[in-house]
Length: 92
Image (tube, rainbow, N blue to C red):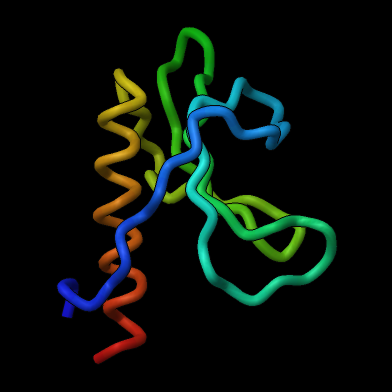
C-alpha cells in the first residue's frame, strides 16, 4: 500500500510558529477545523533534541510518543514512516 502514498514534501523555510523553533514542516491533506493548516512540524526542543508533531484541529499531537530524536533528519525519517503507516491504515 505504501507505494500509493504521496511522500511528504518538507518546507525548510516555513512561517509556522510554535513554542519551539520549527526546523521543517510538511503540509498534509487532512480535514481542517479552525485556523491551523494541517501539517507535521519538526521542532528543535533545545537541549532535549528534535520532535515531530502532527498539527490539526487546533491542536498538536506528538507522533514520536515519548521519544526525542538527536537530529532533525532522524525526526523527519520517523515522521515519514509514521505518515505512511497512518495513511495505510485507511487504505486497507
